[in-house]
Image (tube, rainbow, N blue to C red; front, side, top):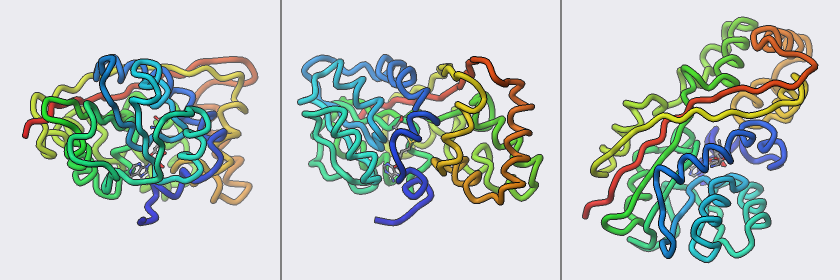
Length: 266
Ligand SMILES: C[S@@+](CC[C@H](N)C(=O)[O-])C[C@H]1O[C@@H](n2cnc3c(N)ncnc32)[C@H](O)[C@@H]1O
């Protein structure tokens, strides 16, 4: 399996992920499942499941025996399997799904297509394993706009070190606009593609609660923090805190995501 950024920076402890972007994943999963709307009796696949937020939502709607999940990160797949006994969890990438044609009624990828080595190949695989008439869906953050945590993080990182601009997920992540995401699903051969926006939020005890998981190196933002020498890391910490305007008391941040769904035609 190729060691891409999307695979590499999500190899650590699931707990760090839970405290980083995973904070938003449960609410996003509920919104995504409402849009994809899998019905009791149907089978669904969670592609790039991570520690299992969307898997859990699908399992609560369909039952664990009707849900499968894959992720190329062995530690995330293992955590998902422990958290959701009875779900068929496998270590695999979207680009090579270990399932037969038409095995599922729905295949969904939450916060994953932008990390795939080949998003078009990944979504085509999701289409292949979904039956005719079934649903393929993908959700991504609005990195360039209203994903407050990551937008502010990369603005702060670029202010501290202009070279960090090249790493800014708002620029480097494709397909993370409503148009690009919809086009990806259409290009993968899906019909009746619709894109919606959803705004979710997450609670923090204080700024340290937000910063600590970044130091563990999780995700591209965490990898950037972990690679910085201590003085620059401190400067980024201060810049981020100041730009967010938060400190020692609890706060919430909002995050906008795009959700696209399409129907499989054969
Ligand atoms: C931001 S996390 C999203 C996890 C989970 N879906 C959620 O909503 O919390 C991105 C996930 O995509 C996985 N990933 C990276 N490359 C992938 C690929 N080519 N196919 C499937 N999953 C991939 C990572 O291992 C990681 O678990």
